[in-house]
Image (tube, rainbow, N blue to C red; front, top):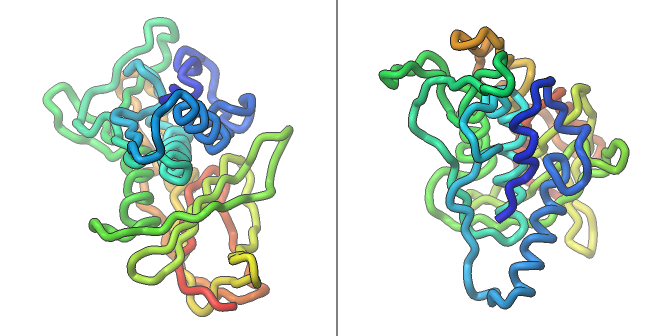
Length: 265
């Protein structure tokens, strides 16, 4: 499967994930559609499931991007994009707590492919960005457990220079709730409306809607060499808002947001 934008691992300047070219970090769904089409055209039958058995931002361990808020946005976009476009399973790498590593090409760049800021004895000092991204995917977007979820195509119309600023993934959970994941890669907040189209008529969220967001308001990586830490390092913000045909939902800057509730036509 593709190594999306892995070449960015050696960049020493701050990463903007909305400033790359289509088909890399900011256009994950298009990348997966093209890749899955190629794999099936190569002769892999649709009855054979495709797995990504090891996934993270790069194939080397010394990039600080995974522990920045951008690393969380990438993880949510990549894993949801994979599942929404025909991949059967995506496995995160790496779960174990490991110390930060220095990028020899960029001495100020200390990071790792990890959910945790830990020392060499595996003592965890802080949870990092991808821990919270995993939590948003596994506990907020989907219902925990092994029951079947139904994933549906979803689209957002906010773009800049042809690249999507907000990507979205929708599913119906086994508890009957609809859950919409929105990844805002823009350093600005957006106001969005959400509509469900079954080809016959439109529906919207109705009644109380749970809104859960994790982003730059909750988490900032502070580069300090081997002593780099996240500060603030807060859990996702949870609020309840009212749905309806005229409802507008705030999607914070540089954030992963889940909107969850029942719908009405």
